[in-house]
Image (cartoon, rainbow, N blue to C red; front, side):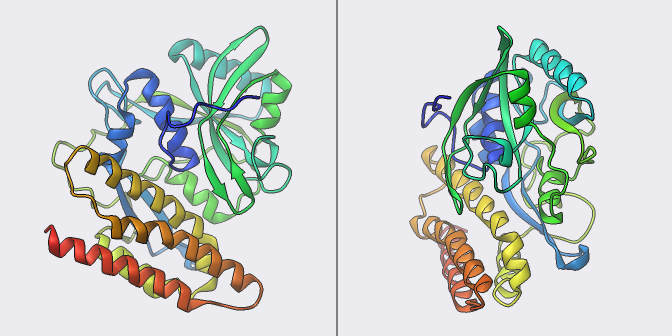
Length: 326
């Protein structure tokens, strides 16, 4: 098992990191297209006080392809099978048709994951080919997680080894299911949790937003907050006092931090927006504060002050930026 060359793919969530790598194989520039599409929306009307997060629109490529829903008329969608032999055959077909395929792994069964043998979480991996009875897998995701460091890896796996890596996550908690539902930015139907899963190209189900579409539009049915100030204001009031919401949604804010920092870095490098170190620091600090507070709460010592202060610093920075660059 070998490390993937560092710096080739932006450090995003495990889904968008490998999504960008997949899309770049067809039409380079997916990282920029993702940056253009990033925005944070939060659904607030779900049962049991759960929240849903949408981190980006379905983002478009050009007529030659390149987005997860692009101008060539296709989009990515889940496919699945309860039978491994059928799944294996269909994965090979997708690779033959398009050169690679995104498959849904299970961190508990991935030897290179710090969650190996411990925590089962869906994880997108890139299958880039099959030769001599082995599958070439690439995982570009890189992050320091609570369980340890997840480093990018490539591997050549036998059928049995790949089957283990793609073991279905049958008992994912509801907040994880919501992440899968909104992995494309808009809600989609999920296959059975007992099935092996992967992504395929299918005919686009809706026209993509045209040029100039506002990034704050509602991702789907339900009550969504989409204005950045409203989103941060709501979360800053809710999470310091709601330990359960803080605990189950800390990872969602971690993903939001990565996506929004990616957007700012890409657009400032292109000189489309000014650099904003204060907001970047605020987004970098927020997930650290949330995880610290969640761990403290698990030990019986809630720290709402830590959460509130992190949100206050971020809101102050984003408000100052809005005033300086309306």
